[in-house]
Amino acid sequence: QKEVEQDPGPLSVPEGAIVSLNCTYSNSAFQYFMWYRQYSRKGPELLMYTYSSGNKEDGRFTAQVDKSSKYISLFIRDSQPSDSATYLCAMTKASGGSYIPTFGRGTSLIVHP
Amino acid sequence: DTGVSQDPRHKITKRGQNVTFRCDPISEHNRLYWYRQTLGQGPEFLTYFQNEAQLEKSRLLSDRFSAERPKGSFSTLEIQRTEQGDSAMYLCASILGGRANTGELFFGEGSRLTVL
Image (cartoon, rainbow over all chains, first blue to last red):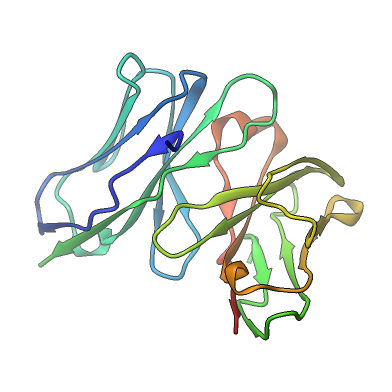
């Protein structure tokens, strides 16, 4: 079993829909949680990061962390065709100092006009 | 451009040949990571440097792989005696060491390796 699980999709939604992307993890040592967006044949780019449990909002994007359930989510409001990409969750452990992000396999999102 | 740059963007080689990838991180970033990504998978950690010191290596980094970061600036990743299973995207990322806990990695565009 991988430390971080993520459904690969694809997830296909109409323009304007609310999108929910999720990851589960098994290691309770993870404390920092990130969402990256990756367009085809490009490197990942960071969308948001959160520390421990709670919500964080940035424009149309909201990240949620539920440490008790070991479950994180990314919500995209008013989705646009330009949001079509692969969304990767990632997380790091707080101790040890190495802070090596562990990634999920990514969810492919398609927003059609 | 002050982002992370990687070279070459795409390398096609025959099995058994050696290949080398270069990464130039953002200039003030003292921590540099190498990841490997195959189709349909997320990035997998290979190794990272703090300045010129290689601090951790994944078990994925077999003895055919070697990475260096002389003088703590650019980094190279060499693969010797390439195998078809080495075909992947090799991603370099950098971050300011003091921000490492946030996971705010800045990635390059990647170097795609195809081994025939």
